[in-house]
Image 1 (cartoon, one colour):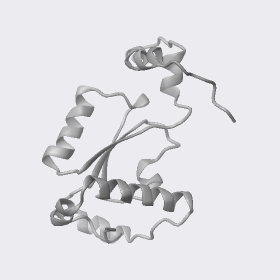
Image 2 (cartoon, helix red, strand yellow):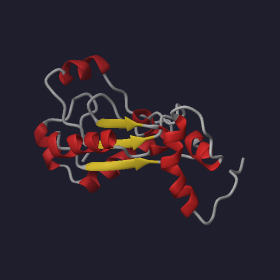
Image 3 (tube, helix red, strand yellow):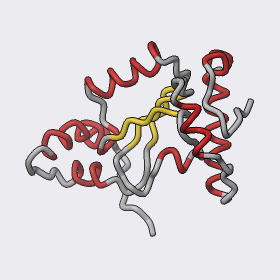
Length: 156
């Protein structure tokens, strides 16, 4: 069930989508992105439509990495998804509150955690970097590093 690319989701459309349908739509959007076949959108129409409200279908937790622009890689647009970005994809009370708002208040059907390769925050945790506020962030990642049994260098 693909929504009109030039209209914001209505509440009714959001209610009709299942989590599986949302996931499939994100996968299809990623396929369009990978194959350079992204949808053409009327951004002015979407902005105007968005003034009446929003009913996103998913909340996506992603790293701050600038090489992974969430809406772009899933071929999504204004009003389609909430995005929470934090280095290393770590959870915090604020991230959890954002997810709770997105699902319990705004009606999102899916929480999607997006990882990526060559994460600077994960590398910093592996290297046990200690510097300012980065120290607290990498300490939250280190338990996952310590629990990993098969860590290898990235391949070019």
